[in-house]
Length: 94
Length: 127
Image 1 (cartoon, rainbow over the protein chains, first blue to last red):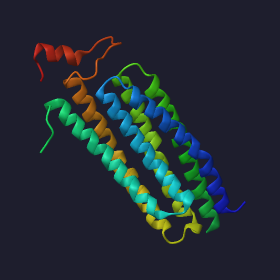
Image 2 (cartoon, rainbow over the protein chains, first blue to last red):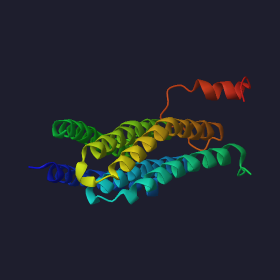
Image 3 (cartoon, rainbow over the protein chains, first blue to last red):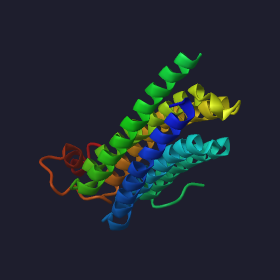
C-alpha cells in the first residue's frame, strides 16, 4: 500500500467519529438549561469543526480549507469573551 | 526520505485517532454530566486533547505527505499556528465564562457539597 492511499483510508475512517461527536454536542446545545451551557456547547462545536476542516483538507488535498480553521477557533474565543462580559456587566463592550 | 515520511505519518495518525476518541468522550461527558461546572471539565478535555493534539497530528501528516505538492508546507504551518493559538486561548475563554457564570448566578450549582466562593461573596469579603 503506498503512502497516499494509506493516509486517505485512515483519515476517511476517522471522519464518522467527528460527525457523531458534533451531533452529541448539538444535542447539548439545543437542550442546554442555561446560557453558559449553550455557549460552551457552541465552543466545543467550533473547535471540533476546526479539527474536522483540517482533516478534510488532507483528505480532499485542498489547502484552501485550512485558514477556515483559524477563523473558527478565533470566533469561538470572541464569543466566550463577549458572553462573559455580558453576563457580568449586563452590557456589551464598546 | 520515504522512511522519514512514514514515521511522520504514523505519529500524526496516532495523534489524530487519539484526538477523535477524546472528542467522542468529551461529547458524551458534556451530555451526561449534572451541572455547568462539571460540564466545563468535559469541555476542556474536548479542547486540549480533542483539538490541540489532532491539529499537531494534521501538521505532521501534512509535512510527511509528498503527494500534496508544495502547498503541504502551508497546510502544516497553518495547522501548527491554529494549534498554538488554541492552546493559549481556549483555557482563557473557559475561565472567563466560568467566572462570569458564577458571578452573575446564571448557572445554578445544584448537586453540591460546599461552595466557599459563594459564602465569601455573601459575607462581602470579595466582590
